[in-house]
Image: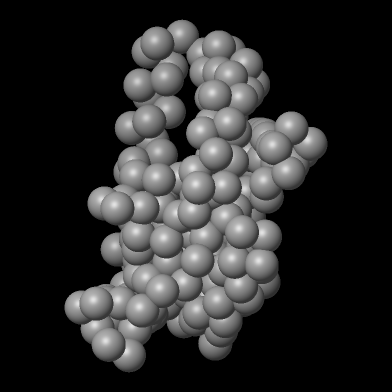
Length: 171
């Protein structure tokens, strides 16, 4: 190893390994059941949830990228596949003539309204019901603290250095 970095101590390693293994298994389980029960992927679910909550069921792609944390190219390709499946449409943006908006279709709304109760049940079964109310509050506080730190650091670039957070409409 280089520099002054040291290996994780026993407590740090236990914390990291438990967190890592828990989130990997939880996301795998959630994704498997989501796909099996609704035919949606995790990115589909994230996009549809965001659009369902957005005014008029419409968002600009850069707004969706904040929700999905997808690079511009990956988001474009994923949205194209969702358009082909009839879940969303691409429409001209009235506020930015050269821009586009992604709009939720009736099929997309049906898909998210069908999948959301199942997702809620799975989150309860595999995460929330295992925790006391106090542990749920602690997990929320811990998650918010880590998220604030990650967001303040910016988005990692391909070169390994953190970038400043993306500001619309440049992203």
